[in-house]
Length: 169
Image (cartoon, rainbow, N blue to C red; front, side):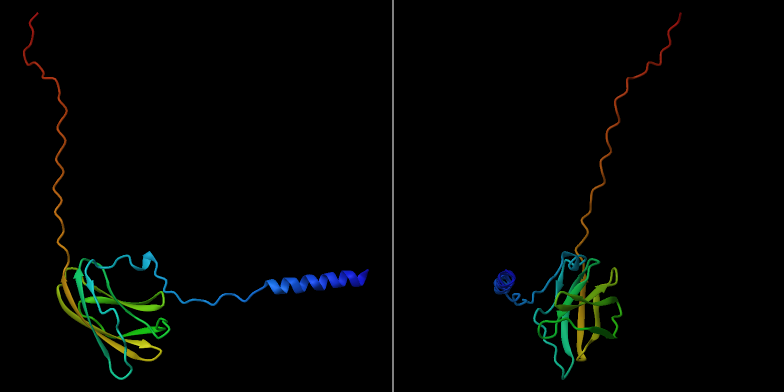
């Protein structure tokens, strides 16, 4: 009787082992959340297929409308994988640069100073392979603010007219 129980238990294990299969291969997908896109300038023009070279600095042109938003340049290591670190080697004179990971890429964002219109530039060294990107920025006026008309005051409620004549008794 014990051998029957042991055979049944071993047979059950063999059946269960046959049901297991290796996990499906992972597919690399770029994940970009809506929060990663908030605050972007309405007008932003950058190269879409920028390839960084190890031999010399890569140059890029950026055109941004100054409406308070950022304009971002996306770069990635082969794979794609984001760079581990970005060092600002030449700071912009009239704006701010922010380097961070977005999905499988690294975004180099530039935000111009409020009210600035003109040209600016900055450079970033990306690690681990020390590739350099030099960015020339043209800042254009942002969209004109739409003037909102002042609200029309509500009419005063009608009040009955008072008589100024006095009665004599």
